[in-house]
Length: 295
Image 1 (cartoon, rainbow, N blue to C red):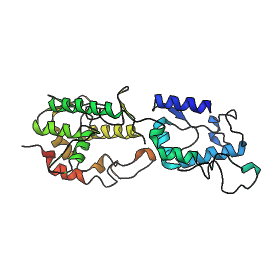
Image 2: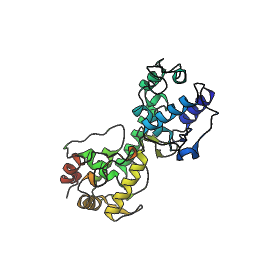
Image 3: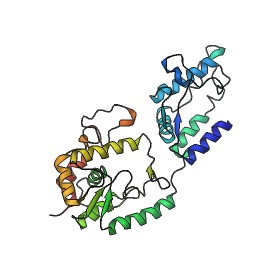
Image 4: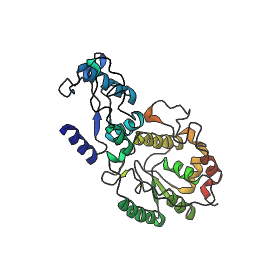
């Protein structure tokens, strides 16, 4: 238990701490075998089966490494109960008695609390202060600094609606308003989190990184690079918003082309398709409305 308490403390301090899943196996994955020092008392066979059961349910293999927040997010989604993993409905022999705590409900109670019980959420008061300050900054800015795929997120947020309103979680509304008020405002394309991100629950103000689970950061970077490639641009390029959106809408008619990888196929847990395999229905509506940009 002291090791688990220490691990939890480290994860809470650093939600993107890399965690490597190791377990004892007989196969070609034996290169990562951790040995028996941390086995629990139920026996080698039980320890081996429990570990492989968990890895299988997570859709991973021994030796896989992920940021802590990704692993715990996946665990909560894929393993709702300890029953059948840490203990069995029928005890077939002394070897397979399982963990005495398996049916006590502790795991299920922790599972019900969700990710926030493991990794505390961002302080709501701090978020509100950042939202107010960053929203005002975007609306007053003489130029915008935006990561490439957020041009598409702004389009989906607009969705062809006649009336828009700000939300707590980001500055998409404010960026759209800044462009609608000044269609020729310079927009510089930047890597990583941008002025839209800072109020988000998943933005870490200490590191300036998005700590969204389910490997959001990987997908976001790929979307950024795909947008740059399709537009023939690079990080640091600056264009008037009107020209940038004209190019975006001419070359990317659907979110399927970027957010669903062009074919809509989800090849792994980390590579989910944002907006669905056929594309977000709001994107073409906002594209037809030219994001409300006049002229």
